[in-house]
Each structure stands twice: as C-alpha cells, then as structure tokens.
Image (cartoon, rainbow, N blue to C red; front, side, top):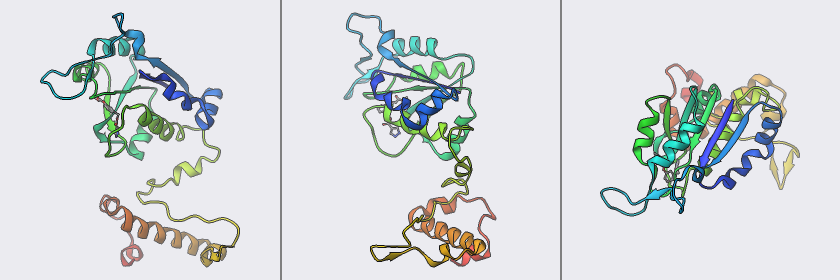
Length: 239
Ligand SMILES: COC(=O)COc1cccc(COC(=O)c2cn[nH]c2)c1
C-alpha cells in the first residue's frame, strides 16, 4: 500500500514515520509520501487560500492549487480521503475497507475548508471520501490523517506482532472491549476478577462477553441497536 498526504504543514505528519508505522515503512509494508501543498502555488506569496464567495468568516483553500497537487499525487488507482467535520463517520469498517486499498491520498484541509469543486472534480476520476473522525472541529486535517493512517496500517498483514488482536479488536464483533487485567493479582487492595484466574475458558469467554455487552449498553447503546439481528443470544438478552 502507498499513502500520500498533501498538507501545508508537512512537519505535522512526521509521526507517520515513528514507531509502528515507521517499522511498517522500513519493512516495505507501506510507502509514505508527504507533500507540501505550497509546492503547487503559482504566485510569489504562495497563496493557498482566498476569501469565500457569499461572504462569511474565514478563508477557503484555492481550487487551482489543490487541483494541480492532486493531479500530480493521485494516480489511476488512488482513493482520495478528505478529513472533514462534515464527513461520513470513519469507523473500523472504514479502516478495514481502506486497508484493502492500493493507494490512499489524504488531502488535509484548513481554514473553512477546500473549494468543493476540488472534491467534485476528483470524484470524476477516482473514489473520494469525505470522512469525519468525530463530532468536533480541528484546525486542520493533519491530526485526523494520523488517526486514520494508524487505524488502517495496523490492519495490514505483518504490521502487528500478533495479528489475532486485530481480529478481536473492539468493534470487530460490534461491541466495546471489556476490562483487561494483568499481574499482580491484588493491587492497592483491588483484586483481579476471580473468573479470570479460574482457568475455565468457557466461563472466561462468557464473562468477557458479558462485560463487553454491559459496557456497550452503558456507554454506547447506539452500537447495540446497530448489531445485526441474531447477534445476541438468550443469555445476552437476559443481562
Ligand atoms: C471538503 O473538506 C474540507 O474542506 C475539509 O476542510 C477542513 C477544514 C477545517 C478542519 C478540517 C479537519 O477536519 C476536522 O476538523 C475533522 C475531521 N473529523 N472530525 C473533525 C478540514
């Protein structure tokens, strides 16, 4: 997989080359390119934004600059991903879909956003997703790209030490992950739940699922409502 990022703050994407993602790059599992949008500006002031048509606060990112940048960065098999508060939710399902992509190009918007025609023009020749990583507003898309890149790259074969954990992720069964424990058995007077030390794997699996269901019910009832029919058995329903 290749990932390219276009941004006016390329240094913001330096963490892409650290730790897990850095190792994935070193091992040739992914290629990463970060591009300074200003390389495609045409004027002496290297302007990337201008006043919004229709008035209103803030500035809008210029279509010409973005158009030229994406012409150079995107190829015939690219998927363009634009982080925006106005996007469809980025979920684990999105991450799985992106992990199968050959070439992801992330366009980092700033100010009031990118001229919509850039998206509309790109959509004529490639898949374009406007995605949100949450219901809040950032100053730019760069932090969202770091989030999405991590969620996607960790799913690639060979990136994680123990691939099983990617399968048993939170959300892989549609539920939140329950609590986890490690040694010591008692810490500051708090003991590890008995069942986890019992060695009864059926009971342990049951307890873990119950914990996941209760936590999901309490914290994210919306996820419960979204479970496919038949996901909950008789025992689950009695919780
Ligand atoms: C067409 O898309 C655009 O113009 C994007 O423009 C902007 C403008 C400001 C900030 C951002 C960054 O994304 C978020 O704030 C965001 C993403 N997820 N949750 C919050 C992007």
